[in-house]
Image (cartoon, rainbow, N blue to C red; front, side, top):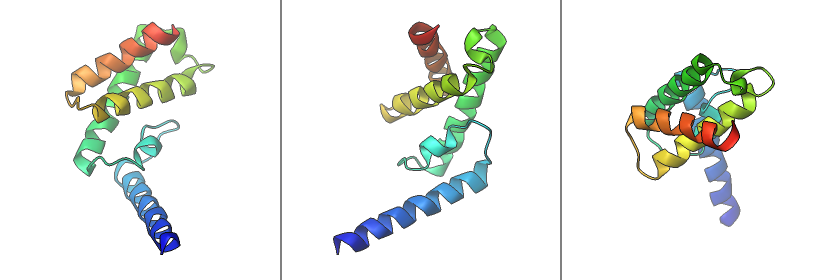
Length: 110
C-alpha cells in the first residue's frame, strides 16, 4: 500500500510539473522546476514566475557581476529559491518578493 501511495505521489508530481511547464514555458534557468513540487496554486505560481523575471531584470540592469555568464545560472537559482522561501513564509507582495530576492543576492554574494 505504501508503494502505491509513493507511486501516486510521484505521478502527481510529474503531472504538476508538466502542467506548470506547459502553462508558463521554460527559460534556460527558470523558477518553474523549483516550483513543480510546491504546494502553490497555479495563480500563485504565475505570480512567482513574474516576480522571478522582474528580480532578474533588476540584477541585469544593475550591472552586477552576478549577471555575467560565469555567475548567471547560480545567481538565478539563488534568487528563485529566495522568492520561494519568502512566499512559503507568507509574503505575497510581488514588489516585496522581488526586492527581497535582489537584496538577498547582493548581501550574500556580491
